Amino acid sequence: MSKSNSGTVIRRLRQAAGLSQSDLARRLNVHQAHLSRLESGGRRLVPETIREVKAAIRASLKERQAAVARLTGPKK
Image: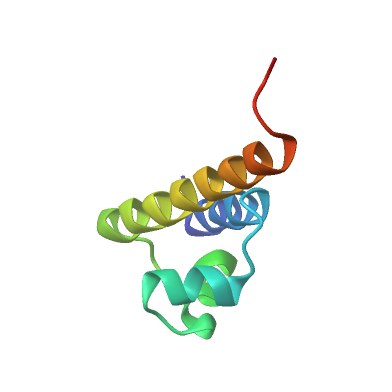
């Protein structure tokens, strides 16, 4: 997968998780500009970065699911 394709995947996952670049950058402890370069293919994605992004996005999706469950109440 090319750098730009990897970045596109990260951007789509981030957006699906409801995170802005700033939100994800904070979770990863990087500058928003760095994340922007990763997403645009301007920076190389290393395996450790990919694992960190996946963990941050997974946590966000779980938070969203928990919020929906709280709002909708228990299933009957």
